[in-house]
Length: 271
Picture 1 (cartoon, rainbow, N blue to C red):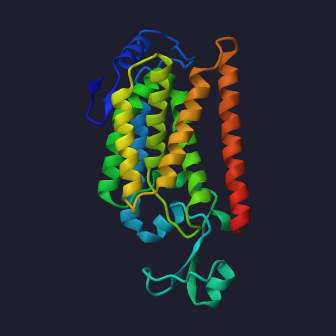
Picture 2 (tube, helix red, strand yellow):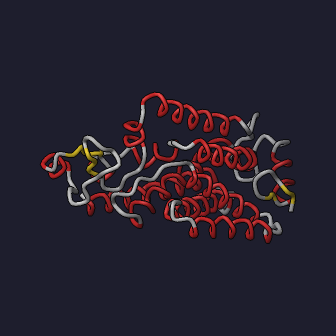
Picture 3 (cartoon, rainbow, N blue to C red):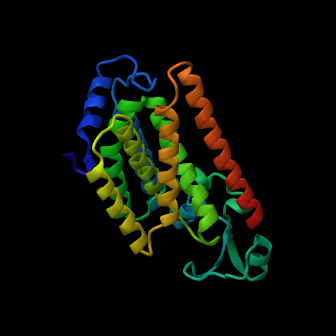
């Protein structure tokens, strides 16, 4: 294994990525990115811009963008208080509170915007550092469009897991789910090229242990993102060469549809 600033890279993966940069078409059908850091830079810029906007606008924007499965009724005078029995906007008004909408009450955008939302500088910094080191090699291997698809699908599956397995009043935010998806993506590519991933699995295990041992971390989002990254990348790298592009995009679209259906079903239950 080759030590990197965050985690490890397997030599076979690095070799495969280097080979990719000398070819017009990558081993998995993606067109070579002239600058494999570009998409990562754009993603980081969006995350930083949203964080800066929250600093200017305030907590109201955090509530608008972060993921809340069912919504929450906050005190109109004290944002640290909330009314657990007021589970709908109508009940919240009767209780004298201020309703903060969630996915089940119409804020569908939160399933993606939450992945670009941070409040604490440390949270933002850790996620962006991880993205900086994981993103470019994965874009080099998969191509820009496929890399972005894996990233966004990981964010979406992370939100689906939060919808199903977290409390309906939970507020979840951050790029961690999508970053875990990139970890899963790296593992799949490493398995495809038959790399030695023992240290990578140890590193992943440490991250998972930290996830479950820290009550302030959304294990649902991390596991959901990891599963999404594994599934999306497997669709890409194990697609047969014949008609590969069409099969890959059909598979990714199918994964997206299934994830959206899961979110819609859960939102209907919570609503």
